[in-house]
Length: 290
Image (cartoon, rainbow, N blue to C red):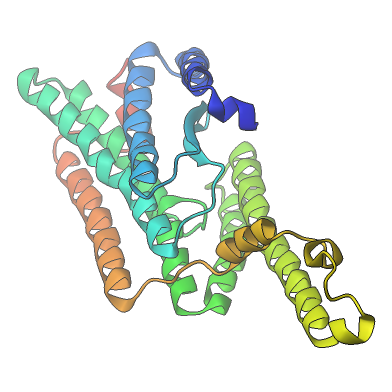
């Protein structure tokens, strides 16, 4: 995978190929007009994450569509801090307001209900990511980052809550089996990565402490400490950065939580205003594209 990210053309080719495949699948499932709106709204949202990753100093990143589920901005690097994770998470819904403004402008120029329905799609996509309390979605990352900044146990508990939530949503009929499997897999992978990193760091610290305390008795001083411990300083620094992310201060948490709530309220208000003019149920919205 490392070569992939060193070739700047390959991520773009992958993005274009994934968009093309999404167009084919969504056009088959819906129609071309509905598909174009989905692509635009999702692209702008994910580009917000992608763009802000760069603002936080993350260079090893790309963006790809996952047909027919949506898209994701990815990075091979760990988060610089919990504050960075929160800001990157919020950047998607903030940029999502641009798609709302775009479709609203089109409506002002060409006053047709299809453009109001497009505003509705953009709002639903962004509100879905904000409102669901799942750690891998935007709103969940905001909550998780704040909880971990307060106490590690609270952050761990939120992961467990995320698993319980998606199972409950599935049993209640709000999540289909493919969506459950996709979200469940990503959520488990991230949680397992966190646990594995903590375990590996604990072993490293234990070996390091043991050698520091008993090295003289074992007559190992002067030898290659890294070889004896079983890890390099680079590996230790990486794991330490992953496990012990810099926490947010109270001002960062308040600002992040306030922005999070303002975005949710904004999207709800826009949908409420739309409901006075069009049917904003998913079936109703889709009917405007026929």
